Every structure is written in structure tokens, then in C-alpha cells.
Length: 172
Image (cartoon, rainbow, N blue to C red; front, side, top):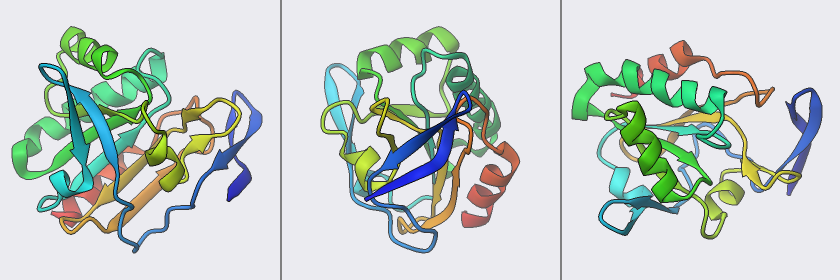
């Protein structure tokens, strides 16, 4: 299933491939990877029990994606371990870890959809033309149900941090 013209990248219409995510439905299961003394897996089951924010970006090696990750890192510091916070991209896990180390990112972890691209497909967030994830923010309640979803209409713009953080706090 594809959703044509749902987003733009630098003004150009793009196609989102995959299944459309819907608020109120359980999040699809997933397996992402992160670097921690080798490669480790992160799954939906690992995040259940606490509200979760998934900050989805095309690549941490771009200014807007870096800004989004740093902003959520700052905003989420006050919540400590009351919530799960993950930035998801298709960057290699080792590059994600380097970025976090260089930028002092400690309140949000990174995980990669680089191996199978299943996260992007199952969440409807793959930009078909670029084979990257689009910019989005998803909030899950402690049971893994989608309670908030913002797919940013123009990939080069930042998400609505206030709405996403309000949804996360109300899910707590």
C-alpha cells in the first residue's frame, strides 16, 4: 500500500510506502538495532510498561534531524526513566552511537531500521523514492497502543514538539 503525495521533500511530492499507522491501534511489532558493545536488538516488547516516544528521522547526519534529536533529548531529560525515548533512522547503529557521543545525547536512545526496513514498511514511514524514513513522531502508551502520530508534511521541517510532549505526558 502506498500513500502518494502525503509528504513533500524540499517541495517535491513523495510517496510513503507501507501500511498506514492509525491512532488507537496497537503498534506493529518491530526489531531495530543499536550499538552497545556490538549490535543489540530493540523490540516493541522491550518498550512496553512505560509510555514511549518514537522520534523518526531520515538521517542524523542532517541539520533538521540532528536538531530534532537534540531538542527531544533536552525536553525529555526531566522525565528521566519514567518514559522510553527512541530516535529511529536508517543510519548505521555505529554512526548513531557516534552522533550521540559527540552531541552528549543521554535522554533519548537511537535505533536503526537499516537491516530489513520492516519498521518503515510496517509503520508506513518509508519514503519510496529515497528509501529513507520520513520525519514523524509517534507516542505509544505503556501497552504499546498508538496514542499520537505526526507525520511532518514537509520532511525538511521540524515536528510539533509541544503536541508530541503533551501526548507523551498524558500517556504517563
